[in-house]
Image (cartoon, rainbow over all chains, first blue to last red; front, side, top):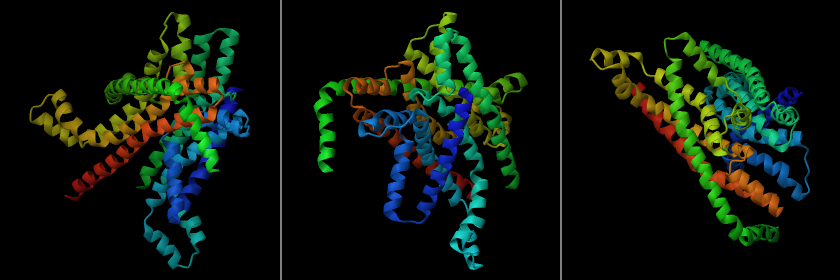
Length: 202
Length: 229
């Protein structure tokens, strides 16, 4: 049960983080100074504060402004906002790694800027960013454990409840650790394969 | 709008005599936690990195598997609550240091291994050929060169650890996050206190981030020069 919620929260916030991160990185490319300052401020703040603090602000502090959010949506929002900041840096370095000649050539053959982005830039960025994206997915999976602090019913939360009802403290927590390991181990192998495939292209 | 902000800030001024000393002490604990677990992680990480590169397959497999790991929180709960039935009782601070140290060690091992293996093996062979012992080779030839590759990701880990100390509040370690939470519950001012905690973490972590980015640039410059030769 807890594992399903953990995977759900991971997937949802991973997609949220990818969308937000890509959007931020692309908006940055436009080169509007004020907006860029705002975005880099956002990225710096979110990257330099703990996820737990962000979750507490969303879950415990926003109600004082009259905004109530349930634990699971709050967790997904918090992790997505945080992940968006992290991934925007990943996407930015991916986009920067692509030689500007690619863009110039695409525009020269008469592609629109949108087509250039869609068919030339993004496919190449995708390739570069895949390994760090995978690593981030693993980190995110582990970060979901923190979400139990705002009472989202994932593995750790479920483990804590089970402990209070069975008193099998050692067993339950070892089980929880093994469960996380079983989830992150295949993911790590997958990332390793991406990395190897990528170095094969170089 | 401006009135709202002034009212908001006024609350800090009014409560500072109460909050200030407590927050101040809690920040001290957070820094102690970070430093202690970072030192532990480096020592353990170095051992793991050496184990990963060792000739014994079993040791290697263990050290590789160690890295995957599980979340900090799971490790902390296991250490703090899970070992009690076995008669092993840590206080919250010790459990936090061990838990953070263990979880960071895997990452640090990976950083160290990558850094050490990035040094051309001719360096080692040359050092051995001039009659240096393996220990001297590692100490005087490999480590100084690996250091510049390793330093930025190590600093990055320090930032991650600093942020992760907040998780230790969940096993009742008296650090910044727990203090903020307690004060928030007592004063019914969650917005003020969690924002304050966020700002303090930011002020601690941001200089480190800037230093890391600067170092990354400096180190890269050095490497490009060596390629240029």
